[in-house]
Image (tube, rainbow, N blue to C red; front, side):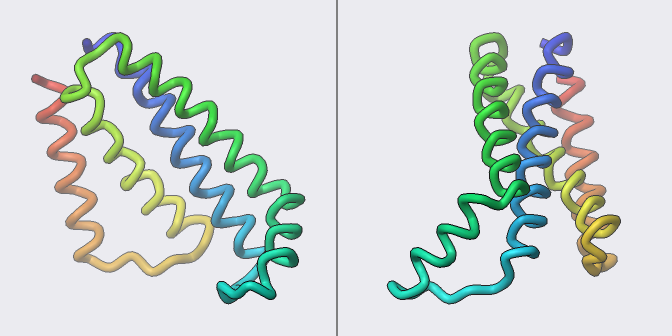
Length: 122
């Protein structure tokens, strides 16, 4: 199963890239309220935003990759690797979006890493 870790991580990184692209796209669109009068204007901005479209494409590819993963390894082995996405997104959020990362959040990310080490060794 360990030989499929690169494939698993490809799916995880594509999923994380999708999150980053969607965040970048929504930053450019800005805050909006959910209302009937807002549906068309917001949808038109979302539909043409290149970051949103790239994020959706990354999601689609990540689903295909994940189906390949699930056809080859136990879900109980593969699924915990999705938590790598939390680590990646925490780092990207700090580095690209200047998000505040508390000591408690860093501790949580380190615990996730420790758990992944246990799963990968099993």
